[in-house]
Amino acid sequence: MAMQVSSLVDSRTRAEVEAEVIADYRASSPRSAALHEAARRVMPGGDTRTVAFHAPYPLVVQQGSGCRIEDADGRVYIDLLNNYTSLIHGHGHPDVVAAVEACLPTGTAFPAPNTYQTRLAEILTERVASVDLVRFCNSGTEAMMNAIRAARAFTGRDLIVKMEGGYHGTYDDVEVSVHPALDDPTAGPEHAPLSVLGTRGVPQNTVENVLVTALNDRESIERIMAERGSEVAAVVIEPVLGSGGMLPADREYLEALRALTLEHGALLIFDEVMSFRLEPGGVQEHFRVRPDLTTFAKIIGGGFPVGGFGGRAAVMEQFDPLRPEPLWQSGTFNGNLITMAAGVAAMKAYTPDEVARINALGERLRQGLREAVAEVGIVASVTGYGSFVGLHLGVDEVRTYRDAAAVDKGLARLLHLALLSEGVYAAPRLMMCTSTAMDEATIDEVLGSVRRAIQQIRPALVA
Ligand SMILES: Cc1ncc(COP(=O)(O)O)c(C=O)c1O
Image (cartoon, rainbow, N blue to C red; front, side, top):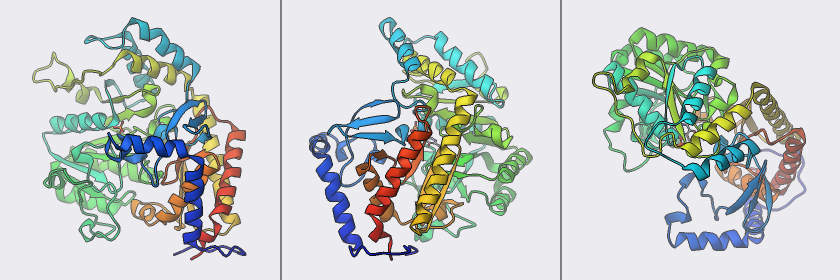
């Protein structure tokens, strides 16, 4: 294990530290434990969202306000996860609350257009230069499904190329090579990865329609396009890989994807479900690369279930029912009033100044984390862009999925629990993000907690 600590006087073993951290966690969350047991009797695993589970049991969160949340035992945490980056304003932003309260008594959903969805569509098309037309759905998963369908229909081709480690939701065709094990021989070599089903239950032949390539590896995508380019409907990428490790693509790589897709008549899809928060016009504004289609979700719903996809008029017009053979896209709650009203309020409050401010908070957090790990001599890497932050323990440089997958996962889980005991709520894989409900003092408070949590698990950091 690639861990070293400069001076150690603590004689506890890693197993002892682990037992202590778990005992502390259990002692401080008895009500969550009991509620979890009750939930397990009616839901497998006690929840409806696998990513939210972690051992020994997840905390039950009762309420949130601004950047803080409170668990069932009355303990308060700084929320550095923001429902996996979706709550750009933290909890209970007054404009969002007012917008929803105004809507609620008048009805929540009608099988008819409403002015809120037009307003949200205007906001997105004004902000994102590559988006002429947009449609809404209820999740990022659906957004990806519809964007891929649009690309396949537009090109008349079936093949999709995605990044190894890229997470695009739970639609079958993107459940490929999401987190293949490093020792899985079927995943192929680093520079020529092979498609691996992400979960049981997805048809085995899905891998025939979905090729994978390594982030920032130009030769790999050039080879794929040279061999199969005429069959490719779309190349799909998050310009900053989110769940895959908060890893920004290189600008040159995105430019190469744009050139290659144009050359081979394929579409380029940017999944900005997470990264839309990183710049006012999505992170594509920073990279100055225009995709054909962009998918949205998370922040655009103001905290309510949402998805959206949009792009070039020629591609999106396929969904116009007045066209011959239009594409069918429907959903009972698509564009419902509550989500759309909350989204409009949230997006209006997310001004370019606020984007820049929380990006700077992200940089302050990244810098502070680098200092905190350097102080105790831990081998670690801090990744991210703007308001996205990833902490990877046990690896000194992370540029690709395979780098990120090589982290010491046990240690990450330990630090995650120790952080909870110190009042900081991050993802178990140590993914974090800032929100407009935070300021510099919040970040400094987080960093104080991080230092104490690291001290608590210090002996575990030794090989
Ligand atoms: C980049 C990306 N795409 C798509 C999705 C799927 O979104 P949803 O969970 O709303 O279905 C996610 C969810 O985390 C995501 O991070």
